[in-house]
Image (cartoon, rainbow, N blue to C red; front, side, top):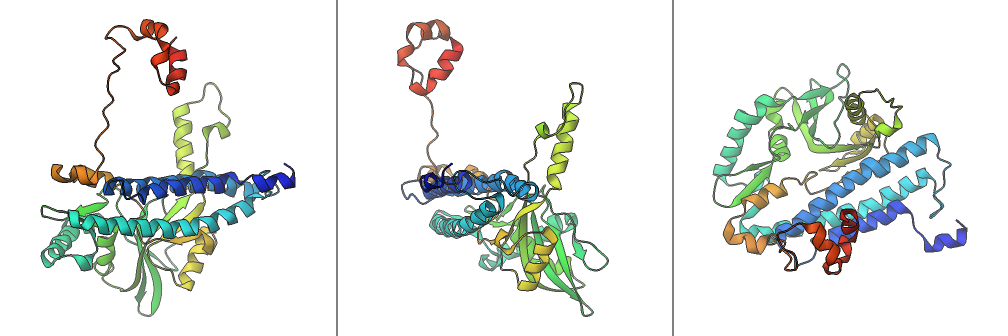
Length: 354
């Protein structure tokens, strides 16, 4: 594409980020029920996760193999596109965090409260502590990183609680994976929907987990890995077992390069450099977020909303109405006679049926 034409075009990846920003704008619309707005925040988040895994992952591969490839719409090579993406995503994090915080506050009067340990009532603190000791502590798999214990492999999009540890003057890092098979949130006793996120519970009681160490700099992190792998990339013979190929592909995705790191608290310079060296990323790929890194639990909360509040917090379910033009007979003969009464979006389906 000629250089003067690039004034009228834009990079596909940056354009996609603007599209996802419009999803976030739906979460700011005060005419939308609050939990539906929170759902848009969740959709924005899952979209961004997928973007990093696939699109950023693809550019990462290109930057290593053929960085001379130029995007015709923007004139940027893969490395320049990655730098532009990392810079464009940073303000989106701030916008998302602010939107989430505003919606969370607006939900409090309805009894939907996401809490920290400090915000719990005394009885709730006792309940959480007992739940942790009885249900969570026995299934945790804490790991220590020091001269004798290498850094573990962190799974894609899983949460890890970390801390700086010290024993007899020796510094090390403690890592606790948040168990995948427990709920993301712990609901507290009572009529309201009061809950605390599981990573916050584990982070609060890290001193119990690492009881023989001095614990400081508590944090929780999440890494996003390149997932741009397709079975089509591999040579597939007619007689090959496709199921086995898919298993190998999925296993390969688990071990691929880190393209993003998220943290709940700021990292000190020493720890930031450590993670950059370990994951082979730049500081621009580390994003701090004040909101949950996984928002799937929003749908669980929506299921718990009492009937008296559903109209205020959730859209009424849409029930398609039967067409008054159709009878209970076979559809194809009716379509052939009266195609005109279908919406334009149905034309492809009609042609397929006919």
